[in-house]
Length: 262
Image (cartoon, rainbow, N blue to C red; front, side):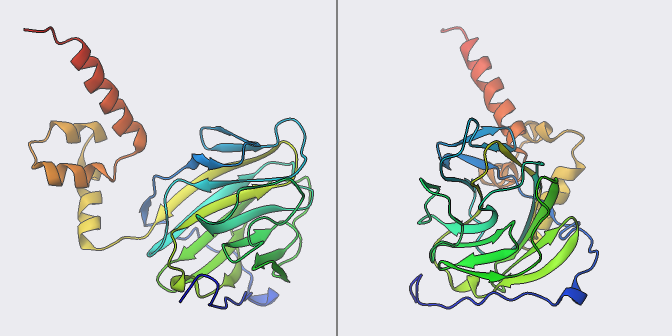
């Protein structure tokens, strides 16, 4: 089945099904992805976990992709939206590597074709260039938090708004064979979208055991003091925060520089 063959139908729960919901994957583990410096529009500036769109003025649509693919498993992330919420479309969702991340026009970029599935602040969900009603439009110029829940096993994508579950928006994403990534986009000048919680479900008992072992360490960098086989060491390291890994590599580099030649 090719990318364009399957038909993903947006589905939304009726309004009386919208309710206060606990944060999904509250007992899952942290997912250490971030906005990608390599896969973004030139009209996006990144400051830690914040993406600033069109820092001067806007003359089109800009997007930025997440740094890790999320196919398979359960994933949840939150995007905190600044008060500069207006314009043609501020969007949240997922896309493949084939989706474009910049347009010199004002469009609903995430979902403009078969490579994206997106929610617009206008309350519409987009895929294959078709927008459908999903929820009421967001109030413009008011800060909000959007939660995105992706179930790679069931192939569903749904959204939260300020802790309220809005319902399943898309189905059938488990048939997508290309890598899928989180994505955000905006046409509005000086929009700030900040990545909040990033969670993932457990991949199995081994994944849980890894997390429990690392949680037992008083400090995560103590992993590097344990006499472990290299393969096990690398597996455990994969679940460390990037800041810990980066600090360790910097320390190794510094130590190497201070070793005098024999």
